[in-house]
Amino acid sequence: MPENLQVVWFKRDLRVNDHVALYTAAQHGPVLPLLIVEPSVWADASASGRQWEFYRECATELQTTLAKLGAPLVVRQHEVLPVLAELRSRLGPFTLWAHAETFTLQSFARDKAMRRWCREVGVKFHEPATFGISRPHPSRLGWATRWESFMQAPLAPTPTKLVGLKGWGGEALPQWPTPLLAPDVCPGRQSGGRCNGLALLQSFLAHRGRAYHARLSSPLTAAQSCSRLSAHLAYGSLSLREVYQRCQTELTGLRPSATTQRRALQAYLSRLYWHCHFMQKLEDEPAQELRPPNPLLTDDALGRTQDGSKFQAWATGHTGWPLVDAVMRELCATGWCTFRMRAMLVSVATQHLWLPTRQVGLHLARCFTDYEPGIHWPQIYMQAGATGANLPRIYNPTKQAIEQDPEATFIAKWVPELRPLPPCWRHQPFAAPPELRATWQLAYPSPWVEEGHARKLAATQLHARRQTPAATQERQRILAKHGSQRAGLPTTRPRKKVAARPSPTLPLFG
Ligand SMILES: Cc1cc2nc3c(=O)[nH]c(=O)nc-3n(C[C@H](O)[C@H](O)[C@H](O)COP(=O)(O)OP(=O)(O)OC[C@H]3O[C@@H](n4cnc5c(N)ncnc54)[C@H](O)[C@@H]3O)c2cc1C
Image 1 (cartoon, rainbow, N blue to C red):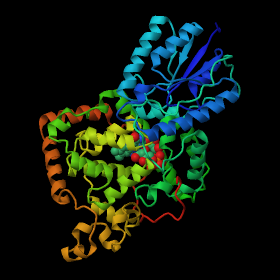
Image 2: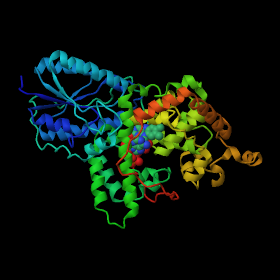
Image 3: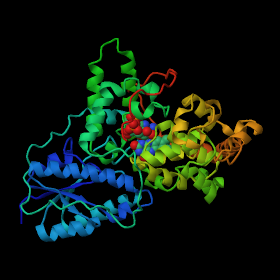
Image 4: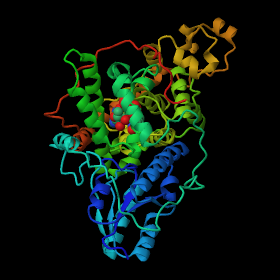
């Protein structure tokens, strides 16, 4: 039986750099790096094939790196407790290390059972933080300062050599995690792995992100000008702290005259703050994966009902609102779209079409390669107006189309049915005079509902719910528990409107 054995369980932290658990474990004894492909995790309704493929690519690169360091990755395709029990019976006592994870309700329950098992069999368990999320979380007061201290702390050194266990590790990764995971076609999905993540960070800082703040909203420019690091942060091929520190170094090195770049980097750094700010919400209230924090604004309370045809139209990009359909088709084909377009998709589904928030959120979760429940669910409920803390923004999809895609080129790319139309009608073919429409013979639907009417109806319903004393009380509770307390930290300056221009460069991923 090996002495002082340290088992390092890799979850969504698929790297050896700034890996506190691995680095610290290696100081205490030989290391057994462990990856558990949990069928139950991949059978969750939010999981998808694109997420698995990205994860697998990250894990494959990690495998190569760990083998070179001297401790090959041990791979198991099973649930966590039987795997740990197998190691315990074959290897005797060990210390277990794993980064704290804020993920699904299912993983939350699994971790509780795992901690109980550790106590029962006498396995010591260490769970260092990997994000700026507080656990346990005393209150939002002082949260921003704690976040900043975490981000500024030195990175965990990268091991140059590990002492592994002879005869352990080197198993192949499964091709597919469980037969319950449906096949998923995503030809434009971005590739996983740390090398790809580092290359994205490098190109973002060197040129792509120079006007990030001005180009992050339009679907014409966002794919190039945003960092595109979200999936790498979600699966941990890059650490949030290393990205933060690279950006800070870049910011410090800027010439005083580089005002645009400074604004871009400041805007970017504030998103990294939001990353953890949102994840803290789910950490503090894990049930937000299933329902909004405000019990007065649930789908049942608001009377949002399932409607198979409407849902299908939205989920496949056939609503009759060209920008909505273009974005949904882009998302299905690439696994990504920018923040504003995500918000618009939710707004249209839950406000105009009055579809149930959870059903909408689950479809989007599967479409996103970067699915991160801690950002996803609080954002879904916020955009659906279901927190009650802020007045919901209800996007007018035609106004967004005209502002964000003025020449309708993005629409033409993703909705080929509309290509033959003059650009001025591609934003709203339904508004063209009937005699003109008759000449087009469009194989494209009309919107399900009249946009202005549906928007007003949704606003009235949500507004009425906010007016009651119970709603005010609930709002105060939510703000106290989840509200941002950024006192003392730098803020980004108010946004200046800059017209979106199509990016002259080629698409990043296929
Ligand atoms: C309804 C909805 C669902 C979303 N679901 C997810 C999700 O599952 N996973 C996810 O990573 N992001 C999610 N976001 C936030 C945001 O849209 C994405 O992080 C961003 O588009 C990813 O692209 P990027 O890495 O190029 O982002 P960049 O614009 O380059 O931002 C850098 C990083 O900051 C973080 N970030 C950016 N915007 C936000 C935000 N508004 N809130 C919290 N963190 C942010 C992300 O980690 C991102 O990688 C969601 C937004 C909405 C409106």
